[in-house]
Structure formats: structure tokens, C-alpha cells
Amino acid sequence: MSGASAVDSLRLVGIPGTNKVMGGELSRLAGRAFDGVRLPVPKKEGQGALVYPFDVETAALAVRYHRTASRVLWGLYQSRAARLEPLYDDFLGAVREDSRPWLREGASFSVTTSNMGRFPAGERQVVGVVKNAVLEGAAHRGFRLSVNPGDPDIHLVASMHDDVVTVSIDLAGRPMNQRGYRADTGMAPLRENLAAVLVMLSRYDARSEVLVDPMAGSGTIAIEAACMAQGRPVWVSPRRPAAGALPPFEKPLRRSAKPLFSDTRPLVIANELDRRTHDLSRKNSANAGVKEFVELWRGDFSRIEEKSVRTRAERRGFDPGRGVILSNPPYGERFSRGELVDLYRDLRRWCTRFHGWRAAFLVANPDFETAFGGRPRIKKPLRNGPLRGYFYLYDL
Ligand SMILES: C[S@@+](CC[C@H](N)C(=O)[O-])C[C@H]1O[C@@H](n2cnc3c(N)ncnc32)[C@H](O)[C@@H]1O
Image 1 (cartoon, rainbow, N blue to C red):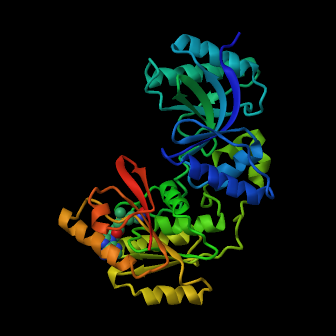
Image 2: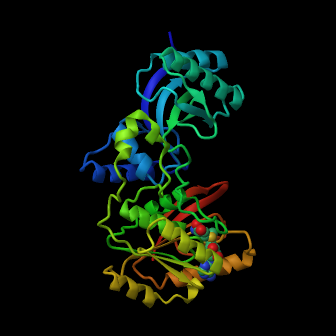
Image 3: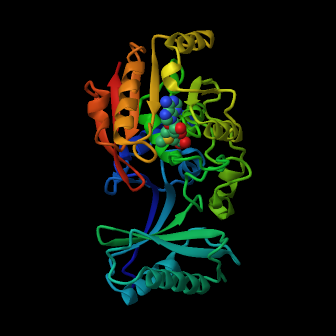
């Protein structure tokens, strides 16, 4: 008898510390897509993963529209085995007994691992075990599958949390941040899903507020803000989530993906000093389909007149007395410590002109808080890839 349990879960995996943000985003999407239907309360798996009961419509919604998650997974099997042979037996038994329709005759699959560092065997061995268990278990059920690591129909991932190994299908088939709009990477672009997290944390209300990124680089924050405001699909055509090849998703993912909040027409201003990077932001916002909502300005932010921002806001029907400044300013490379401190002080001086607004930043530099001054309403540790940083939110 199999020691693995078949689980049926929708797993949102994200940046550590963003569970609340990921849950809030899915609730907002589901509220609109399913006419106010409330989702079950998810279980937390550590600091950066949420687990919901699996439901194909919610999973299809997440893999199409969820911007703050790094991965959207369909959890299939779990095992507590701590060695390779029992792990193989567990998963083989579970695949044999499974009757869910994720298998298709002739389908190809790949297996990768994530967070398997604590399992007492190498990652390649775990991959081999899962691969063989799936091939054999599927053959027992009458399906001939093949392995195709490069371009598979089904992307399986084995991951470990609290001594439990879970095998899931990666429904996007790639990290969710690879949306397809980035023309090039600019100098230090933020991950797209991290930019989306910042937008959520800043509590930007696109129906009444303008958002300004004074040091926008290639425009990631601005583009994500505009896309979130409109509830636009994550994927820029022709990119699609891999789950479209799985039988249960054929119907929900065949329907065309329209923006969920097309009635919201945001105004986002992205300013950048460097010409080449500014040009990239133009391409990126066009590729993302939001160029009508993102105004691209070029120059030193400290020269931007507060009056011209408020006038733009008013002309587009926004309250000029409210708004959000959201940015990830430079925090290391290419600037000396003194230059950065001066830049943060200039930023403070510039921000204080926007009385009544909020300002929020992601910075990985210990000098920022003192140089910027004032007391943040929120200070939250948030990693930017390998860099330990903080998210700060100030009332201006
Ligand atoms: C960390 S990067 C921002 C990356 C951006 N979030 C992205 O995803 O592409 C900081 C940016 O600030 C710009 N910058 C530095 N000083 C500036 C200034 N005084 N005015 C406007 N932009 C400035 C740099 O050229 C750089 O592109």
C-alpha cells in the first residue's frame, strides 16, 4: 500500500514575507472573476507559500492573472519518505491509484526540484526517482509518457517543506515573472512579481490615486502598477501558461483572457534619468499593452515640479491631493556612499513637496533610513533576489 497521499492543492509560491499580499491579490481577482465568491482561507507553508484546496477555475484564474506569485502549482502527491527507495514506492503507488485527468496519452513531461536541500540524497537522484515513478505509474494506467526536459507538456516539480516532499505541476511552466514584455533587462531591473508586491504594499488605489516612480529604470513598477490596476493577464501574447495542454484546463484556458478591471483607467508616471534605460521603458510598456496608462518622463527627478504632476493628475480626473510615490532607488553599484546619501536626501526634499501623498521604497542600503529621515509608517524586511532590503512606507 502507498505511503504517499494524493493531495489536491493550489499552491502559490512567492517571495518570503508576501503571504498576505499573495492571498489579498487572489481574493481581489476571484471577487471580480467569480462575482463576489469568497475563497477558502489558505494554509500558510512557511513565509512564502499559500495552499488552497484545488479548484480548476481558481487555478486557471491564478495562472493567468496573479502577478505577485513566483509559481502557481497544482499539488498532486506528498510523501514523508526520507530515502530514495520508499520515496519511489510512495510516488509509484500514488500515480497508479490516481484517477485525476492530468495525464494524456503521449504527453511529455519534465521534473525539476526546488528547496530539496534537506532531503538526504542529491537533487538529480530525486529527479530520477520522481521521473521513473511517474513513467511507470502512468504506464500501469495505460498512458505512455515520455521525458522531455527542454519543452515538455507537463512541468513537474518536487519540493520539500517540513520533511514532506510534494510533487506538483507547475501550471505556468516557467517562473510567473517571465511575463514576456521585457525588451531587455536595463541596468538593474526589479523582478516583475517583486514590483507587483511593492504596488500591493503601497496600497495604491488606481481608481483615485496617481502613482509616480521618480527613478523608474526600465519601468517595471509603473508597468506592474498599470497592469494590476486593470487586472490584465500576466502573459503577453503569444506567451501562454503551459497548463493549457492539461485536459482539465483546456476549457478554462481556451476562453480569451480579458482585463478583469478594464473599467479602471490608471495614470502612472515613470521618470528616468538615463536615456537608454528610459527607451527600454517605452518598449516595455508598449509590449505590456499599457502605454496609454504609463507616462514616461525623462530627466533628474529633483527637477520635476510638483505642480506639473498635480496638473497632470487633475487633467485626467484624479484628486491631485492624493497619490503614491513608489520607487526602488539606486542602492549600491555605480555610486559612492556619499553620492547615495546625497541622493536619498534629495529624494526626501522632493517627496515633501507632495503633502498628503504616500511614499514607498524598496532599498537595500543601511544608510537610506537615516538619510531619508522621518519615521516610516511601515518598515518590512523584503529581499530583492540575493539582497536583503526593506520596504518603507511614509506618510508625506
Ligand atoms: C535600481 S534602478 C531602478 C530599476 C527599476 N525599478 C527597474 O525595474 O528597471 C534605479 C534607477 O534610478 C535612476 N536614477 C538615478 N538617479 C536618478 C535621478 N537623479 N533622477 C532620475 N533617475 C535616476 C538610475 O538611472 C536607475 O535606472
